[in-house]
Image 1: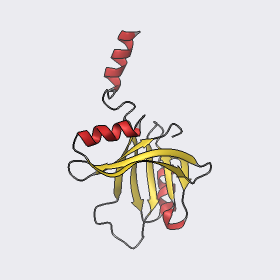
Image 2: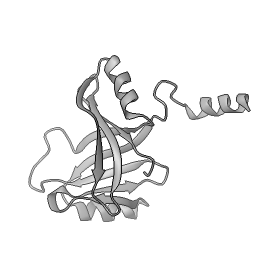
Image 3: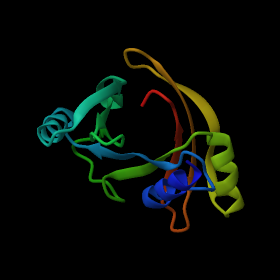
Image 4: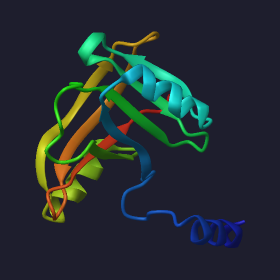
Length: 147
């Protein structure tokens, strides 16, 4: 069994430094949330979860492979200065340990690990942290067993 596990980990590219690491979601602000929701659902994504209202509304769309695309209502009249994408989120088993690893690698931590309750139906508890990569890209650590 040990040899099979090693082969599987090699094929799947298991991260041995940050346990459970993988892409959780990519986040983007959009000009028309409903139009974008319909478009991505036509491409086969499904709405897995939503929270917030009006200008604060956000949808978590399931890509079908365990990864998500998060879209949030942006200001329809405002042109983003740095593109539409807001951050990438990495799925982790332990947010605190992963943030410690990022910090030791020289990352600038912008949000310390914290618990958040997403206010959708049903509400779900997550643990998140944010840091900047070498070129200033924003990376979120996302710990949650439900999504």
